[in-house]
Image (cartoon, rainbow, N blue to C red; front, side, top):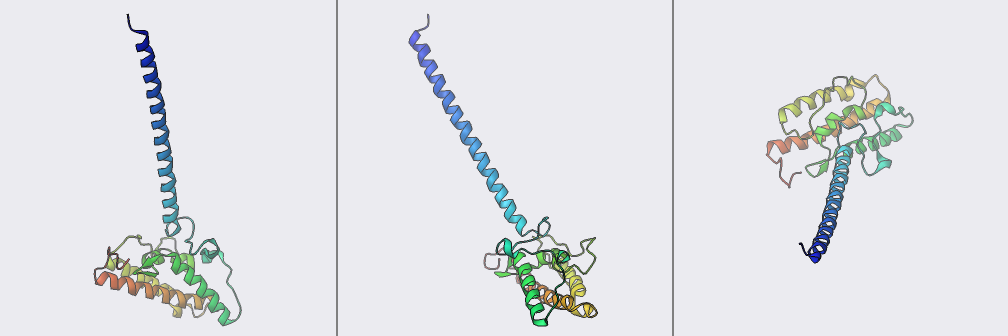
Length: 196
């Protein structure tokens, strides 16, 4: 006959084992939830600067969110006021594109989100879309030159003053970002912590 104390011992061990197993499952569930929350947080952060995301990029919080130009009414008024307003919009767009070479203005993101700031061209085929991790200079160069032709201020002489000012400032921002990218590609700085 089995010993009565042996049953109690086995029952205690069984209870301890069940409590340990329950504790282990709860810890694993908590780890899984924490990982999922971290993954969602990282995805939201990545989407905030992703030109392919549904929401426009945000620079310095929600109050400076870049509202796509096609949803903004064209402001009118004094030239200096217009230039200041357009400058603020363009700077928010540039900051929203992220940093490249330790300065705001990643040409890859700026080309992909060009229609958000300058909607005065047909974007049905997404002619300037570039992958955010592309390092191929020739592809970027072609898209940059196409975009430069579209936003060049001389092409918008007959348009309103706001559009001409916007074209000039977007052209200048694209040019600056492209030069920085071009230097990085020529000197082989991609992937180094000094350049990114």
